[in-house]
Image (cartoon, rainbow, N blue to C red; front, side):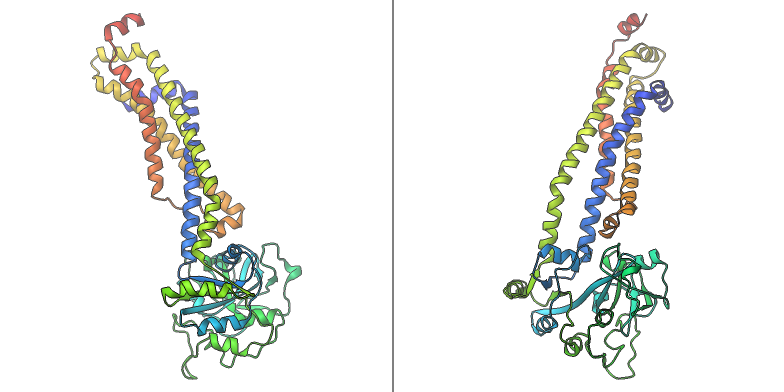
Length: 428
């Protein structure tokens, strides 16, 4: 039965190929939309996990979220370290992590922060050690892979956060030393270069007293790399605010709440201040994704219309072919072929066309998304990739096969119910 169905498809190879390509286009569109929307939502959820609030300078709250959590936009400005001290003194705040931005290396952002940032994203060292002093840096897994940097190597940061920050803007006076490489986490940490806040201040010539106990404030409690020769490790954050000189600000502060009540009280209290704003990641992320919801829905409808057109084309071709081959199929039945065999042969033609279109569409969809992610770093930055298969793609594959079977059902039924004598008489 399969051999006969393949022979019939080869007999009209041009029409069969056209139907396969039409269905493949529809499937590729649906797969690409699924990959992009799912990957982006998953990445946003992972990157913002554990962050209840972002505090920064006045401006667009969406811009603040995109710059401080996802590192996709320019910061809204700087905030004084007094804000960090205020947040850490608030009983409703469980954790407040400062970020200092402004430079990059080969398009990857250099982020001045504290070791708690590693805990926030579940980051662990794959090799080397964490930063312990100014001008030491740890590279995310993607940064290390793309740049080829290894522990012990030095690099120069460039002013600006975009990929166009080149050697002409490099800070020649302040080279960084790589001390460690992070293991992949599937979060934004993979494409960041992490260092101390003091390092960012030093690069930009912002005066500040040196840390009184380097290493204690910047070790990683998770890898056992602390040096405890000088007694207990003091919290990194209070000394940062205490020893900073005027002008030694930070870009944003990532806040985790200690109680649900803080979620109601803190944002309103912060937004009432003239110099600060508080943005809630969950709200701003939902708003950001809603901007694309209409476009994604429209593209999905278009893909479904293309799939319907493909099914209609398969139906038309199979019906015409069944009428053309009515005499041959009737002769098969006279020669002993069961009606179910003839019915299955026509049905199998539709399924084979649908299967070929679906598989080709899956391949095209993944390839298109992967090529787009490699051509546009911003897409890769938000987690878009064509690698890996999502469970929901099985539903698309099943839907394509169902369309093929549905399109072939009526032509197959027409052959199944055909009057053998009348059909053979017309054929001769």
